[in-house]
Image (cartoon, rainbow, N blue to C red; front, side, top):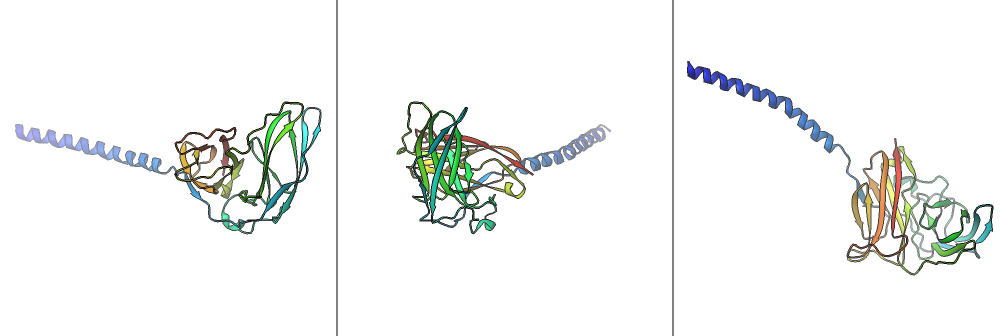
Length: 265
């Protein structure tokens, strides 16, 4: 009798353990499924785009600076050669990224702030008194910069009655270009990262650009556009740094820059 009683106890304990395991196992699988459903953020080099090796952006004369009540209106006139503003870049339909329906244009950047897109060769900018670095470069209709030797213009600009403090334009500089603003619908699936470099090259054993996207770090050793995929809806934080072979930030006023973009359904 005692043996039968012990057998019953053992069977009862085994049954309870089996039921508990049956209840908890699906929960663990569900948790694992939820974790694996989060997309991985990736950064891949974009495919080759149409080249414009002899495209030329030339500033005509000095910028005209006109005072207003509180700011100054700065007017630039450019001459664009071997490149047509206002036309779509021929492969825009195959890129799968955001494209401007207004066509090819000029990216105009002041002190490494967000660019203004200009589809005509004239540029107007409202600036307060101060020292500025002005960069302009030609852009494809999907906002990829033309990285030709003559496709850009850079200069120091003094606005108003202030002592000149020019930046060293012979030093290495990193300028942020894309991504920018809000992306919606199909444009959220693939977002282009593009930047502009001056007086430096990138290589596996030399200077690099460190891109940090929502906490994910990527090392870039080739100056090219890149595609970001796997971004979540909502706000994305992007940080770019020009670093040397030892991982130190290269000195310069623009070589670390942070931006945010928004993705919407």
